[in-house]
Length: 356
Image (tube, rainbow, N blue to C red; front, side, top):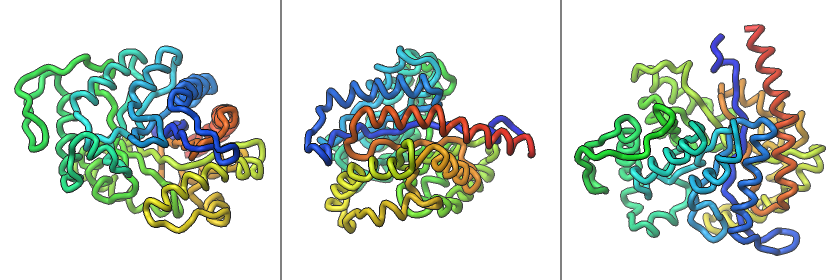
């Protein structure tokens, strides 16, 4: 039994929401939300969590337009936790600058930086940086190719259709890790799973609706593509990212997490033509086989263990918060995830590993 097969990383992801508080109506400033994030990362490190991810968005209701900067602010105050984007919208960014930002973070953190590259579920960055949505897929494929070329070689020669060519130029600083870890992030697109498998890259699935077990066919596609390309599927890493919250009791967790979740999901519902988000929808999603990981430590741990059995994931991100919640509540959820949930999961996996 390999170490990868018996281990599982548990961490936090966030988009640094700065939406109106659903109870008070107060809107937290971007500056305060950014400072809160640094405190959250430091606490996550202290309570033994493995990874913290910051997603990139370019909207008024999120403060995380520059994840590498936020992560770097916490890097010098942490010792062990891995620091990743969740995601970097690579299609509308420059791979040279992306590599430089995260190799700089890698140096500050002494080898704990990661890039999670995706096309993004929001489109605001495309007009902001002068890109056309008509090139949505082509941009990602081309820029991922360049990013991987940069991490593989100090000097790069490359030509594409959406960025000036590079001819034998160096990209610095180089990362401490060799190579710098790059993940592919997907919301459930089959082609993304196949691409990640063919490249032998780890993959992260955003599972925010339905039943997590329904992603099993995508995991199979990913592993089959990896095997066809000559990679060992047993050594590849698979992560999932799901909304959730840990409380002292399941009822308290649900009542605390629902108002902000409903408020933010209804913002998205109005933008995308979805039906209104109700308490019934919320309660259905937080059942054992649902996509919300909301409850007391024992219940959240049970759901993560089930996820592991169904999909074989090696990393789990609890996405908290969704919408604006009191900072003290977010800190307590992080503390419970690290001190209560993670030990239960690790003990169960160790037990299964010994039996295997």
